Image (tube, rainbow, N blue to C red; front, side, top):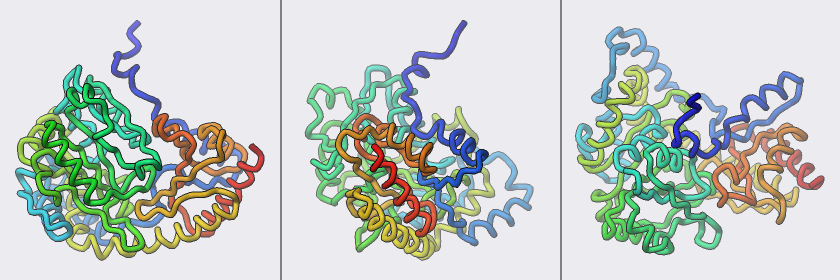
Length: 389
């Protein structure tokens, strides 16, 4: 009996696959569970999005197939955001493409660009879709460990020359999930220069660009000279605007790369719900203003969690971006075992670093997805877990 393809068998375990079931069981048992696992904040989406969705849902034309064109107003709003926010001008119809959330676009870009025998360079720890999309494309992932030694930057100069010869794609994600690292402009410049020399496409995953703190700023890689030749950048409304379930984002890059992505998507989806695109078109003209309100609350939560963790003996760095805290564990404590005990014994959902790849071992990721008081309580519970190890 056929049980699945070799590509299916090659997929790594998804880091959050079993958490909902375990959490549901504990809640059914009457346990108080604090969920700091998925990057899915408890704040409401913008009222502008809700109102635009409600209006559009009443329009029968919005229930028709979107196809890959989608809603022109969304394309135009996304292009206007790129120009206003980054100074990057793009053609909304040739250099930008709507996505059903950035996740699917990242996976489908691999299918558009990679063949068996090709290599994609994958950060580890990193978003599971980078390796998953590579495997589903039939290509080979080459994992690069993100560590404090390089400030969690993926340094292509350290990749063996034989690997770089076969590499067609590299995944970069700054501000970074899960480490919260921010990439300096000089790093982006030298990375773009190397990729241009080598003919490597950069999949630049940029969903946290608005969630920055303490004066940090996150650029578009397309601001870097020469990046248009080699980079496809992915944006999402999910994180900044608490619209995770709405599934809306976009990709932007030179026309040939965007056309390749669109051609794959023609065969696997018919586009994001037009009413959701109308909601996105309503949010993006005021994106920076709306983001400030959400970022202030994430910063308040970060500033409550960090001292609470440190009081329990943890030593996390202060993140300058994202909605995550990347917490080092005491030496010798396995992240998966710690996360399991945190959930079963303390009722706190965390994500083990090893769930993001072997390079994440020794850390757990905590998401700023609940209020400050609950974050402090979670830190106290985690302190008891580590004391009992």
